[in-house]
Image 1 (cartoon, rainbow, N blue to C red):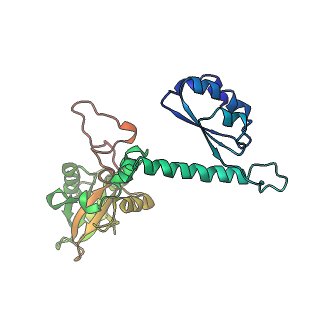
Image 2 (image 1 turned 90 degrees about the vertical axis):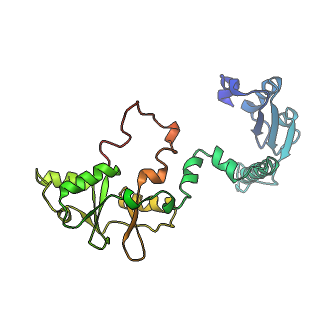
Image 3 (image 1 turned 135 degrees about the vertical axis):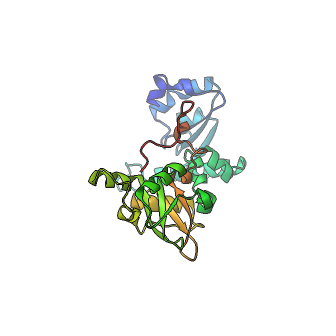
Length: 267
């Protein structure tokens, strides 16, 4: 209310409904601005325990939130009255929700995290890479071949499998950096010399939210999907869980024409 007196009333229009809350109805900061709000054409709803108070007199609708006494033993600190006000606020919100037929789709659309929430409800199998899109090299291959596979598939890693296509490990950009920190030339090394063994996996029917939780827990950006025979079925990257093209935080950033979408330094 104090800020409203010093300019914030400018954001109010005749189409707005103002909810004024004061147990006593005598709060000066509120009562000072109510006449101005009425002149602007805004409707006023009051939550108060004093139906004959100045605030109630200036309101279009008055809702009684009065209590017999406060829980405070001295009867001074607002306790029971604040609880009653919160409960009435929830009740009013539910009534409005029903009156406007507000449903789950509306919630997703208007909730700040709605787009992400909807995205994370999908199944891993809906966004994972499969078949020829899965970066793979066989045990015994040179690191040089692994680097080419990582570059060609563009998700910052390659899976390492045995002759039966069963999971043996993973090589990420991070594994390559760590290997380079130890020696200059790693191209002729075998992939098993630098790979991460026992990489994390996820079931294809788990949700994107569950997969994201695993990534967050272990500080990784890739999860592998196996079939019942423990053979590699697919792989999912953090960016695909979040939507790559579809999802943007705060509207997202756009790349200049011709810029490669892949990061220069993915993890």
